[in-house]
Structure formats: C-alpha cells, structure tokens
Image (cartoon, rainbow over the protein chains, first blue to last red):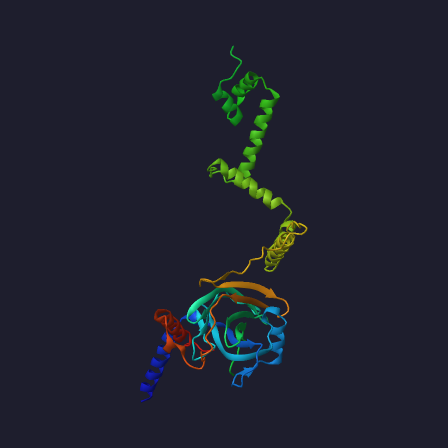
Length: 166
Length: 201
C-alpha cells in the first residue's frame, strides 16, 4: 500500500514537472496596465449611476487646456497584465466592446518606464496606433469621440503591482 | 734535411710516446716553438687531471662527458649559501601564489585606471542623445491625431479630431457584439481577449 502511494506521488511530481517545463515563458506578466474611460462634459450632469472622478484626477485633467471640462465621470475601467511576448486587450466598458485597447511590450520594462505598442479601437475599428511610454505617474490621455454632450477620455496608465501573497 | 715533422710525428710528440733520440730529434724538428711546448704542457696537464678523475681502465665515452664533469665541478665549487637562500624564498608554498595574486591585482588596477578615463569630446550645445519622437498613426480616413506632452497634466496627450461620435443612444452596459457590423474584426478582438484573460497575477 505504501509502495503504491509512493508511486502515485512520484507520478504526480513528474507530471507537474512536465507541465512546468511546457509553461510558455512568453505569458509571464511583466507589468500591469490600467485603462480607464472618463466621460467629460460641460453640460448638466444627468442623474445616472456613473461615479464622479476623484478630485485629484479632475484637477489633473483640468490642468491641460485641451482636456478641461466641468464634469468628469468614470464610465469603466479594466486592468490587464502586460505579457512578455503576447499582446493584451483591455475592455474598459465591459460588456460593451465599443472601446478596446490593445497593447504589447516593446522591451523589458524598468521600474519606472514601460514602452508599449498601443492601439485604440473604437466601434471595432482601429483608430489610433502609437508607441506609448508610460512612467510611474505619467499616463497617456486620449481625447476621444463625442458622446452625450461631452467627450470620452481614455486614460492608459501603469497599475501598481499587487503585493505577493504570503 | 727535412726540418718540418709530419703529422704522425707531431701527434706522437704531443702524446708523449717518444723517448731518447727520437724525442730529441722531434724537439729539434719542431723547432721547440714556445706555443708548441705550451700546448704539449697543457695536454699533459689535462691528461694527468683525467687520470686522477677516471680509473685507468675506463675510457671517456665522448667529449660531452668532459663538459658534464666540468659543469658539475663548477656547481660544486659555487657558493652553496646563495642557492639555499634562493630556494628558501621561492621554494616556499605561499610566496609564489601571493606574488601571482599581487600581479593580477596590479593588472586589474592598471586596466581599470586606463579604462576609466576615456577621452571625452564635449561639444557645446550638442544633445546627449537623439530624441526619438513617438509616432501616432490613424488608419481611419478623416481621423487626425495630435500628440503632445502636457506639462500641466504631467502626461502624454493625444487629441483625436474627425472621429465619428458615438450615438447618444449607445448604452455601454449592453454588449455591442449583438450589434456587430464587422464580424471578422470583432471575432479577432474577442479571441484575443479570451486568450489574454488566461494568465493571472
């Protein structure tokens, strides 16, 4: 009986080792990218369930003249890992795919800088392709299409890495 | 009378096998020049030296044998103290590795000193690196993008112009895949989303 248990344990270890060897290292996450869609408007705020942005974000957006509006509300947010070899897609307005952001790494990121190949898809059409360099507190803002007396602002930023579980 | 001795007589004279009248005749024939007498005396001296070093029954095998004997005699007569002192200094087990380490350390130091001071040409006003402008490509017809760095917002800003407005009736809480107008493109996006959702942090 004991011998059989040992054989099963050894088989399990061997299978797990084979699985680990077949793990694709290109799927290793090297950073996390957070995509947020804001609705910026100067008109009256409709009484809906959209949450207003925090004051710090609003002040930051208002410091840029082209992004200056009276009201900012959060439409959606999605955080996706930046993979070593593969592209990732962020879908901030789930379940809608009206706004999609595709990104992949241009190189090995440093602690402060991540270089990306980034595409913005609106209405399932590729609208913008660019190379974005995201620093710790330096996001990318895209002043996008008009919607309901305002404009959509798509923010792409580095997300803080989660603390490893102990 | 022939006053010049032939080679055989001269060899016999050098080897000293002549006696009596023959010796006297040869001495007179050779003319007893000082150099000949000195050569014969030297030859006799070497013969006596060899006779004392070797038994009479043993013949020297070849000329190198003499050189070997002479070299050994010189070594034996050399001051032994200097040799012993040198052996004590370099024959010990720690002096050679220590000297090697010191040599390597000196070589590394010398290399670091020479590599740390490359000649640098400073040109006033020249940029340290060529700045690379980020590109913004808008494949859709009629869409223009303007990219700039915003110091106020501390961010990179892209302003899109000419992009079609989203209808006010659009509800983002509903999946737009049901209203799909470009099936092939949507299928690609959904496929990639499913694939990249797999890894977890």
